Image (tube, rainbow, N blue to C red):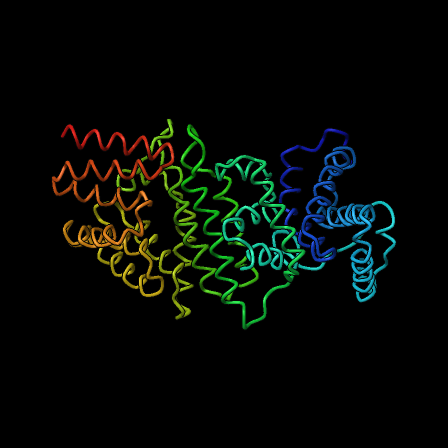
Length: 436
């Protein structure tokens, strides 16, 4: 048995973080209450912090955490007279589960026993975990809160961390999360994986949330002075995509999403200078790109496209792969990228996709062709508050030596709001344009 203090705190934190999702999912299924489950697992983590340095990390940390959290959940429900019926139902379910496995409940009566939770082992996701993320992304919940709820319940991020990521006061984010968890309970949102008839529609909502978690980290909207990239959110999103692919290996859009995140994340180290200032894709040092992530992403997107069921994430991954495989910015196959964007527009005919296609057309053909598309989008007014539209127009106007119009475009981008690193870059770009 390790001596007290022998466990590295990083190792213990990693173990608790790894099994948080499984523990919250398991207790949520048993209690039907996400709020109680999170409180119980949090108390179990506190117990681990107190006990593991003395006794050592258990051979099965996940089972230890779930069993301890179950004790805490039962205590919480017993203190709430309104949940007596739910406690009885949960206890009955646990008894039936243990009986079906030929197990004994003796391990649940005192200190954590040898209870083995349902589902696969370390590094994998079971049905409970998958059901939890589907619940967090349920259509009945406000889309604006689904990301925060997923980060909290599935990824284990603290409320203050989520509030910082979305630039809102911590009490505001706490209220949003509490309301969402109570809605899951009060609306009877099922903690189950959807059946085949509803899986495709519900899966799209889950993939969208995972993608937005990554986007929030890749282009952080944090407070002034914060960096452009929040690596923790990028890593959380990639981890979620990996786990989803483990349990849904036959879904090409899941594979496509993972490929997209890996290919995009591979450029992370080259996107900013040591002072945090932005480096455009064309100017990045490609030797800093993560070759292992690029190789994995390329293999994944090729595998997904071979299924013959192309979708938005697969096509975006293919576009990212075009950038990753180009030896230099000058050798980028912009005609292929423009063709992929045209195909993407068939699946996802949004103004944002059209704007990105316009940039690819400008690179593949000429600035005038791309600018014509962007001018049509600007006239429609749907992207007035999207700074990237104004930046793209300004860049093409700059290439056409229409400097006053380009400067006005940069001003519109700044007025629409940008992360600090991008704001500094665009301000400098505008000054260069004005001074010539």
